[in-house]
Image (tube, rainbow, N blue to C red; front, side, top):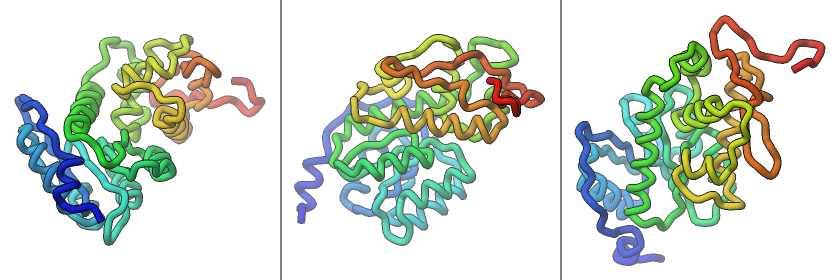
Length: 256
């Protein structure tokens, strides 16, 4: 059993103060009291507004009943596991979620991403890395709420046409749309969207693409517009018409 002192040594590390004109609000759902306290204190020192809880059911009630800019969600929780919490939250909210997972537990990470988590961080982690991940996710989310530079009706209609896209999924769709008919490599997408290096066995991007395709289909758009270019990455085969009056599904004859 790891001592409290050892856990603090693994997780704690000084990080720079962050200036926020409007401090973001973060919900921490983590049952390890020592880790929860360390994260809470570090984020408050960085001027974030923090609410923390120690069990899944209470965390779900907070996540659904209040507005947060980001949720840090552990997977192994009492009363309700983190994946169940995430599933319920995604039914009502697109608030960014950063999953905290056990080192080497790939299946939980994949399932979390499939259910709509924006990213994950394996324990034990460095507090500076956690802070950087939080900053990156919040930047993506804030950017996704801004009007796109291209003022065409197709771009403006994307949020309305597929409202269940999470912030990171929306960012991916926007970037692919801006480069329609051009394959974007996985390393490039990891750097620009996920703000981390591409790993050969990392399926984060693949799961986000899978989620976007499913949501496109539910919105009446052809999911095949997002093409996997083997050995390269992903691309939009063309710029879809995102207007609500249009359906971009293949016709019954099978023509794309």
